[in-house]
Image (cartoon, rainbow, N blue to C red; front, side, top):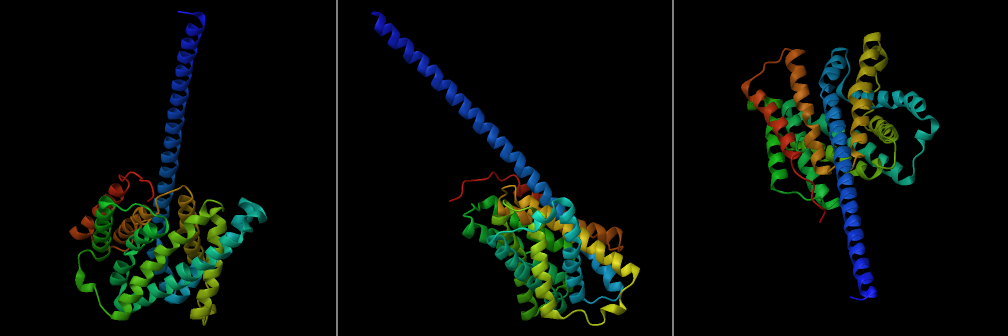
Amino acid sequence: MTANLRSDILRTKVQKIEDVQIEFCDIKERGTMENNTKLNQTKGYIMIAIAGILWGTIGLFVSLLKNLGAESELIVVIRIGTATILLIPLMLASGGPALFKADKQTIVACIAMGIFSQALFNYSYSESINNVGVATGAVLLYTSPIFVSVMSRIVFKEHVGKVKVLALFINIIGCTLTVTGGNFTSVKFSVYGVAMGVLAGFLYGLMTIISTPVTEKNHPLTIVFYQFLFGTITMALITHPFAGVSQLISPAFVLAAIGYGLIPTVGSYFFYMHGLSHGLETSKVPVVASIETVVAAVIGIFVFSESMSLFKLLGIVLVLSSIAIMNMVKPKKKD
């Protein structure tokens, strides 16, 4: 064997070793990136769950404000209006005037969310409750995950498989049982009320679709502030809710308004928007957020002395099971 041939063989072996090392490093790097992505998404889903937990306290604050004389339309404006005011010092303390800067795409998205997913959502949900009752209105609202899954498929090309459909089905049944406690005699029907309830579910889900593209490049507080600002303006123009509000002002009323604006509004939407920025599967998000119904049920039992029926307990178990099943689904590549 000549020296040149031996040299060529040696170079070939060295090249193969180097190729293997490069491939190994690539695999290791991909594995690290996948682990980081999974960790990042886990953090995101935890934030969505925290948002749902905070949303679960809405009934507590609504009850307080109603007992203090506030009507439904005023309560909505108090919620998002107070939140808008509270966000100003929070944003100045967190990041200064820079947090108020937003590009055209973000402003357009926030205008759309303010009009559709704040003002019109709250208006349609209120109309639904006024016409078909709280239980039926709430059941119709929880059709939201269906709308989000369909829109995610159309807009983001997300894969919706059999397991996701099963989780959605279990989630809707669970939410229905948790809200009604299995007492379907409280379920009422009117064409207008049902239409408003379904519209509320659609508009509630629309927020997730609209906000997802802008969450990655904006601070969560920026998105929350502008959608509340435009929502407050739109809601005030639609309902004119401030007649006689001066007669309701008291220390208890102010504290309840601040609590309502801060906990299930600023806090919940901050965690929700922050969670969406972690590259989540949009179709999974509303199912995780439905833990809200469980928290609301627990508050109803321990604060308002509501009964814990077997059906309500089953509903809670089904909601939690649907969240677990949905998060067992491994992400698939978009079509």
